[in-house]
Image (tube, one colour):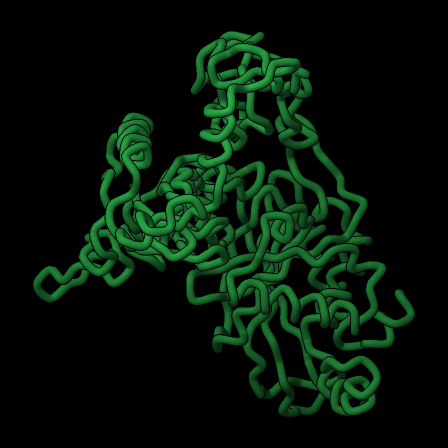
Length: 482
């Protein structure tokens, strides 16, 4: 029986992939989980693993470009490690016994620990913190390491119990699919004792891994070094790593490595300023009506929905209303074309200890105020505890950033490409204003709209801000959608 190896889908905009490098040769016996081939598209890279044990037949050579879904190899699942078919042939008793013994739990089977895929636009990850040390015995389900990409964080757990050998040290950045450690199943723990040899395994409770494990580890180390020469193939204790997040003291200064998220933010912001004609316009809004509304309905709102009516849901609804009137701001430039979005997925900037992320609240035009408040609270929780997924950050048409929570009085927010607009909210400040010819003290907030002047004209930008101002100063407009 042949298992087909196909080019997987990468995303709706990617139709072909390049067979960059085969990690196995034609006729090799491969095991389920082995890395077979590295694929590349114009946007992402990805390693493809075997879904079954068997002998591989390569159908497409390296450097060939093929369509998504194309069969590039076949795995003969009826063949054994020697390459001969096992169907209809019985193994000799001694061979069968040997196979059974190697499959026993605790037999010393070696498993690769690889960087898992994070999403179609993420090609590398950083080893933020090892939770174990090389040589430790770990139980299935134990947290081994915290990984960081430029957008999300993720903990990696052990799939088996056994002895771990760390190949890549903390603080390094590696490609998706890279082997960062090997786990010898059962070695060094009580689960390592096989029924047929209890005395032998109990007499050696936590010594070195079996010889085949050492050989596999050495091979993995060489492969890792070949893939990324700057990586170290041994892992000292994390507190001695020069790349640790604690940093290195240099006189009166401390040098520490930037996190992937911080590096990506830096790159993202610079790219935004270099690829768009960013211009900002300002206005101010009298928050009296909004604050009065919240005070009047808050108790009943919380009782009914279980969340507070905050400013963010009101601003989000005001933004949706304004976007419907100004299609240019919900559009973006793609080459020589303009893509006009007819949906209202709004990004809400959330500050975390590691940096700013922008989770997207879907279909805000269809959500109630309570639904938006719950979605924002859930997104903020994910951002702060590191459980945000790549899907949570994609697809927004506009972004709202509330610098007012930090006390900002006025700022010019930077675009979140490919979006063409971002609204900056600021702190509410009691200021004297003229109302019907009289001076009154009112709670005022400055609003800032940064926009891509290549697609959005000044008139449209000003119209957008005035629409938001009118909606917030007259909340009935939001309810009546007028």
